[in-house]
Length: 81
Image (cartoon, rainbow, N blue to C red; front, side, top):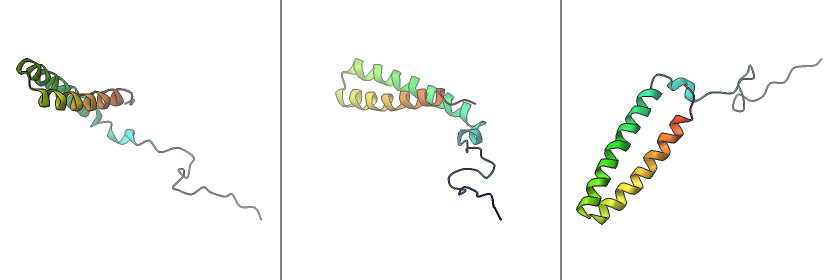
């Protein structure tokens, strides 16, 4: 008697489809994108103020945080809704 073997539920769904993690967040994703864009814009304004005041520690900190925010921004732009 031959039986059809199933893959482990950890590896794949029982019907063969792969799990989409971002499909659950379709309502939250546009709000998250807007929040990241707003934070990046405000941080750019802070960065300009740090340059104007010649505040080197604030300038370095703002550059590091802005780099992380822009990475998150571009990562969110690649996610299809």
